[in-house]
Amino acid sequence: MVKKIALVTGASRGIGRACAVALAQNGCHVLINFRSRQTDAATTLALVEQAGGSGELCPFDVTDAAACSAAVSRHPRIDILINNAGIRQDALLVFMKQEQWSEVIATNLSSFYNVTQPVVKQMAMNRWGRVVTIASTAGQTGMPGQVNYAAAKAGLIGASKALAKEVAKRGVTVNVLAPGFIETEMTGAIPREQVLPMIPAGRFGQPDEVAAAAVFLCSESAAYITGAVLNVNGGTYT
Ligand code: NDP
Image 1 (spheres, helix red, strand yellow):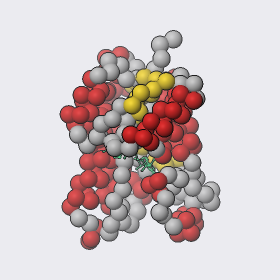
Image 2: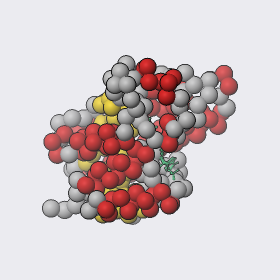
Image 3: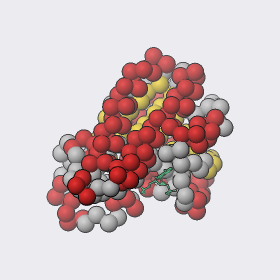
Image 4: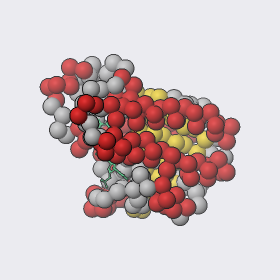
Protein backbone atom coordinates (compact mmCIF):
# COMPACT_ATOMS: atom_id res chain seq x y z
CA MET A 1 0.00 0.00 0.00
CA VAL A 2 1.22 3.52 -0.81
CA LYS A 3 1.80 5.55 2.35
CA LYS A 4 -0.60 8.45 2.74
CA ILE A 5 1.05 11.85 3.05
CA ALA A 6 -0.34 14.14 5.74
CA LEU A 7 0.42 17.84 6.19
CA VAL A 8 -0.23 19.11 9.72
CA THR A 9 0.07 22.88 10.17
CA GLY A 10 1.32 24.13 13.54
CA ALA A 11 2.70 20.70 14.45
CA SER A 12 5.62 21.87 16.62
CA ARG A 13 3.56 21.46 19.80
CA GLY A 14 0.11 21.03 21.32
CA ILE A 15 -2.75 19.64 19.27
CA GLY A 16 -0.77 19.73 16.01
CA ARG A 17 2.02 17.62 17.49
CA ALA A 18 -0.52 15.08 18.81
CA CYS A 19 -2.17 14.89 15.35
CA ALA A 20 1.23 14.38 13.68
CA VAL A 21 2.14 11.50 16.00
CA ALA A 22 -1.30 9.87 15.78
CA LEU A 23 -1.34 10.04 11.97
CA ALA A 24 2.18 8.54 11.86
CA GLN A 25 1.00 5.72 14.13
CA ASN A 26 -1.72 5.12 11.58
CA GLY A 27 0.72 4.75 8.70
CA CYS A 28 1.08 8.26 7.29
CA HIS A 29 4.24 10.09 6.27
CA VAL A 30 3.83 13.39 8.11
CA LEU A 31 4.87 16.86 6.92
CA ILE A 32 5.44 18.75 10.17
CA ASN A 33 4.71 22.43 9.62
CA PHE A 34 5.69 25.16 12.07
CA ARG A 35 6.54 28.86 11.91
CA SER A 36 9.48 29.54 14.22
CA ARG A 37 10.10 26.84 16.81
CA GLN A 38 12.43 24.48 14.93
CA THR A 39 13.62 22.66 18.07
CA ASP A 40 10.05 21.87 19.11
CA ALA A 41 9.25 20.72 15.57
CA ALA A 42 12.30 18.44 15.67
CA THR A 43 10.92 16.95 18.90
CA THR A 44 7.66 16.22 17.07
CA LEU A 45 9.65 14.48 14.33
CA ALA A 46 11.51 12.42 16.95
CA LEU A 47 8.17 11.38 18.50
CA VAL A 48 6.84 10.44 15.05
CA GLU A 49 9.90 8.25 14.47
CA GLN A 50 9.72 6.73 17.97
CA ALA A 51 6.14 5.76 17.12
CA GLY A 52 7.51 3.80 14.16
CA GLY A 53 6.43 6.39 11.62
CA SER A 54 8.14 8.72 9.19
CA GLY A 55 8.01 12.46 8.65
CA GLU A 56 9.90 15.59 7.74
CA LEU A 57 9.99 19.22 8.81
CA CYS A 58 8.05 21.59 6.58
CA PRO A 59 8.50 25.16 7.85
CA PHE A 60 6.38 27.97 6.46
CA ASP A 61 4.21 30.78 7.73
CA VAL A 62 0.54 30.01 7.11
CA THR A 63 -0.18 33.73 6.70
CA ASP A 64 2.15 33.91 3.68
CA ALA A 65 0.15 32.70 0.68
CA ALA A 66 3.17 32.44 -1.64
CA ALA A 67 5.17 30.43 0.93
CA CYS A 68 2.22 28.05 1.48
CA SER A 69 1.75 27.45 -2.21
CA ALA A 70 5.51 26.93 -2.75
CA ALA A 71 5.69 24.42 0.14
CA VAL A 72 2.69 22.48 -1.17
CA SER A 73 4.10 22.39 -4.71
CA ARG A 74 7.25 20.64 -3.41
CA HIS A 75 5.04 17.62 -2.61
CA PRO A 76 3.30 16.14 -5.62
CA ARG A 77 0.74 14.42 -3.40
CA ILE A 78 -0.80 15.46 -0.10
CA ASP A 79 -3.63 13.14 0.92
CA ILE A 80 -4.48 14.54 4.33
CA LEU A 81 -4.45 18.13 5.53
CA ILE A 82 -4.91 19.13 9.15
CA ASN A 83 -5.43 22.92 9.32
CA ASN A 84 -4.35 23.38 12.91
CA ALA A 85 -1.98 26.39 13.19
CA GLY A 86 -3.59 29.11 15.25
CA ILE A 87 -3.03 31.94 17.69
CA ARG A 88 -5.14 33.93 20.11
CA GLN A 89 -4.72 37.58 21.03
CA ASP A 90 -7.54 38.28 23.45
CA ALA A 91 -8.94 41.71 24.27
CA LEU A 92 -12.40 43.17 24.69
CA LEU A 93 -13.42 44.70 21.36
CA VAL A 94 -13.41 48.23 22.77
CA PHE A 95 -9.72 47.80 23.58
CA MET A 96 -8.76 45.60 20.62
CA LYS A 97 -6.05 46.97 18.37
CA GLN A 98 -6.42 46.65 14.64
CA GLU A 99 -3.33 44.37 14.54
CA GLN A 100 -4.89 42.02 17.09
CA TRP A 101 -7.86 41.66 14.78
CA SER A 102 -5.86 41.27 11.57
CA GLU A 103 -3.17 38.91 12.92
CA VAL A 104 -5.75 36.54 14.39
CA ILE A 105 -7.83 36.59 11.20
CA ALA A 106 -4.72 36.07 9.04
CA THR A 107 -3.35 33.17 11.09
CA ASN A 108 -6.58 31.37 11.92
CA LEU A 109 -8.80 32.10 8.90
CA SER A 110 -6.90 33.38 5.86
CA SER A 111 -4.52 30.46 6.38
CA PHE A 112 -7.43 28.20 5.40
CA TYR A 113 -7.33 29.70 1.91
CA ASN A 114 -3.53 29.86 1.75
CA VAL A 115 -2.97 26.18 2.53
CA THR A 116 -6.19 24.44 1.56
CA GLN A 117 -6.52 25.99 -1.88
CA PRO A 118 -3.33 24.47 -3.36
CA VAL A 119 -3.75 21.20 -1.44
CA VAL A 120 -7.35 20.62 -2.48
CA LYS A 121 -6.42 21.02 -6.14
CA GLN A 122 -4.10 18.00 -5.78
CA MET A 123 -6.70 16.04 -3.80
CA ALA A 124 -9.40 16.66 -6.40
CA MET A 125 -7.07 15.47 -9.18
CA ASN A 126 -6.18 12.35 -7.17
CA ARG A 127 -9.86 11.78 -6.34
CA TRP A 128 -9.12 11.20 -2.67
CA GLY A 129 -8.47 13.54 0.21
CA ARG A 130 -9.22 14.44 3.80
CA VAL A 131 -9.25 18.00 5.13
CA VAL A 132 -9.74 18.44 8.88
CA THR A 133 -9.74 21.96 10.28
CA ILE A 134 -9.39 22.80 13.95
CA ALA A 135 -11.98 25.42 14.88
CA SER A 136 -13.10 25.97 18.49
CA THR A 137 -16.07 26.08 20.81
CA ALA A 138 -15.41 29.85 20.78
CA GLY A 139 -16.50 29.95 17.12
CA GLN A 140 -19.79 28.28 18.02
CA THR A 141 -20.76 30.15 21.18
CA GLY A 142 -18.66 33.31 21.19
CA MET A 143 -16.43 34.11 24.15
CA PRO A 144 -15.93 37.58 25.66
CA GLY A 145 -12.49 38.92 24.79
CA GLN A 146 -12.35 36.75 21.67
CA VAL A 147 -14.31 38.67 19.02
CA ASN A 148 -11.36 38.24 16.64
CA TYR A 149 -10.76 34.56 17.44
CA ALA A 150 -14.47 33.66 17.46
CA ALA A 151 -14.93 35.37 14.07
CA ALA A 152 -12.03 33.40 12.60
CA LYS A 153 -13.19 30.06 14.04
CA ALA A 154 -16.80 30.60 12.95
CA GLY A 155 -15.46 31.51 9.50
CA LEU A 156 -13.60 28.21 9.32
CA ILE A 157 -16.84 26.34 9.94
CA GLY A 158 -18.61 28.16 7.09
CA ALA A 159 -15.65 27.75 4.75
CA SER A 160 -15.42 24.02 5.47
CA LYS A 161 -19.12 23.42 4.93
CA ALA A 162 -18.99 25.22 1.57
CA LEU A 163 -15.83 23.43 0.43
CA ALA A 164 -17.28 20.07 1.50
CA LYS A 165 -20.08 20.58 -1.03
CA GLU A 166 -17.64 21.60 -3.77
CA VAL A 167 -15.42 18.52 -3.58
CA ALA A 168 -17.63 15.70 -2.28
CA LYS A 169 -17.94 14.07 -5.72
CA ARG A 170 -14.14 13.95 -5.95
CA GLY A 171 -13.75 11.69 -2.92
CA VAL A 172 -12.51 14.55 -0.77
CA THR A 173 -14.09 15.08 2.65
CA VAL A 174 -13.87 18.36 4.57
CA ASN A 175 -14.69 18.39 8.27
CA VAL A 176 -14.16 20.50 11.36
CA LEU A 177 -13.15 19.64 14.90
CA ALA A 178 -14.33 22.08 17.56
CA PRO A 179 -12.26 21.53 20.68
CA GLY A 180 -13.21 23.06 24.01
CA PHE A 181 -10.46 23.65 26.58
CA ILE A 182 -7.43 21.49 25.79
CA GLU A 183 -4.20 21.36 27.86
CA THR A 184 -1.63 23.12 25.68
CA GLU A 185 0.59 26.18 25.83
CA MET A 186 -2.30 28.22 24.40
CA THR A 187 -4.44 27.56 27.49
CA GLY A 188 -1.57 27.45 30.01
CA ALA A 189 -2.36 30.85 31.53
CA ILE A 190 -6.14 30.37 31.79
CA PRO A 191 -7.18 30.19 35.47
CA ARG A 192 -8.60 26.68 35.90
CA GLU A 193 -11.11 27.64 38.60
CA GLN A 194 -12.65 30.19 36.22
CA VAL A 195 -13.42 27.76 33.39
CA LEU A 196 -13.83 24.31 34.97
CA PRO A 197 -17.47 25.09 35.94
CA MET A 198 -18.18 25.53 32.19
CA ILE A 199 -17.00 21.98 31.41
CA PRO A 200 -19.44 19.18 32.33
CA ALA A 201 -16.61 16.60 32.18
CA GLY A 202 -14.88 18.60 34.92
CA ARG A 203 -11.45 18.67 33.27
CA PHE A 204 -9.50 20.03 30.34
CA GLY A 205 -9.10 17.73 27.34
CA GLN A 206 -5.77 16.31 26.21
CA PRO A 207 -4.26 16.95 22.74
CA ASP A 208 -4.40 13.16 22.11
CA GLU A 209 -8.17 13.25 22.50
CA VAL A 210 -8.44 15.78 19.65
CA ALA A 211 -5.93 13.80 17.57
CA ALA A 212 -7.98 10.60 17.95
CA ALA A 213 -10.99 12.37 16.41
CA ALA A 214 -8.82 13.74 13.60
CA VAL A 215 -7.49 10.26 12.80
CA PHE A 216 -11.05 8.93 12.59
CA LEU A 217 -12.16 11.72 10.22
CA CYS A 218 -9.11 10.95 8.04
CA SER A 219 -9.83 7.23 7.89
CA GLU A 220 -11.43 5.25 5.09
CA SER A 221 -14.32 4.50 7.50
CA ALA A 222 -15.24 8.20 7.60
CA ALA A 223 -15.68 8.49 3.81
CA TYR A 224 -19.38 9.40 4.11
CA ILE A 225 -18.84 12.10 6.76
CA THR A 226 -18.32 15.53 5.22
CA GLY A 227 -19.27 19.08 6.13
CA ALA A 228 -19.52 17.98 9.76
CA VAL A 229 -18.48 19.76 12.94
CA LEU A 230 -17.41 17.35 15.67
CA ASN A 231 -17.16 18.78 19.18
CA VAL A 232 -14.31 17.56 21.37
CA ASN A 233 -15.21 19.58 24.42
CA GLY A 234 -16.18 17.42 27.41
CA GLY A 235 -19.83 18.40 26.96
CA THR A 236 -19.27 22.17 27.09
CA TYR A 237 -22.54 23.82 26.14
CA THR A 238 -22.56 24.95 22.51
P1 NDP B 1 -0.24 26.07 20.56
O1 NDP B 1 -0.13 27.51 20.87
O2 NDP B 1 0.23 25.07 21.55
O3 NDP B 1 0.49 25.75 19.15
C1 NDP B 1 0.25 26.58 18.05
C2 NDP B 1 0.95 26.02 16.83
O4 NDP B 1 0.62 26.86 15.70
C3 NDP B 1 2.45 26.01 16.94
O5 NDP B 1 2.93 24.84 16.31
C4 NDP B 1 2.88 27.24 16.15
O6 NDP B 1 4.17 27.15 15.54
C5 NDP B 1 1.82 27.22 15.06
N1 NDP B 1 1.67 28.52 14.40
C6 NDP B 1 1.23 29.69 14.92
N2 NDP B 1 1.24 30.64 13.98
C7 NDP B 1 1.70 30.07 12.84
C8 NDP B 1 1.97 30.56 11.53
N3 NDP B 1 1.74 31.83 11.19
N4 NDP B 1 2.45 29.68 10.61
C9 NDP B 1 2.69 28.39 10.93
N5 NDP B 1 2.46 27.87 12.15
C10 NDP B 1 1.98 28.72 13.11
O7 NDP B 1 -1.78 25.85 20.19
P2 NDP B 1 -2.79 24.61 20.43
O8 NDP B 1 -2.12 23.32 20.14
O9 NDP B 1 -3.47 24.83 21.72
O10 NDP B 1 -3.86 24.93 19.32
C11 NDP B 1 -3.86 24.34 18.03
C12 NDP B 1 -5.13 24.75 17.30
O11 NDP B 1 -6.26 24.33 18.07
C13 NDP B 1 -5.28 26.26 17.11
O12 NDP B 1 -5.89 26.51 15.87
C14 NDP B 1 -6.20 26.66 18.24
O13 NDP B 1 -6.91 27.84 17.94
C15 NDP B 1 -7.11 25.44 18.30
N6 NDP B 1 -7.80 25.27 19.56
C16 NDP B 1 -7.10 25.10 20.73
C17 NDP B 1 -7.78 24.92 21.90
C18 NDP B 1 -7.10 24.73 23.22
O14 NDP B 1 -7.80 24.70 24.25
N7 NDP B 1 -5.79 24.56 23.28
C19 NDP B 1 -9.26 24.92 21.95
C20 NDP B 1 -9.87 25.08 20.66
C21 NDP B 1 -9.16 25.25 19.53
P3 NDP B 1 5.52 27.69 16.29
O15 NDP B 1 5.74 26.71 17.43
O16 NDP B 1 6.60 27.63 15.28
O17 NDP B 1 5.19 29.06 16.79
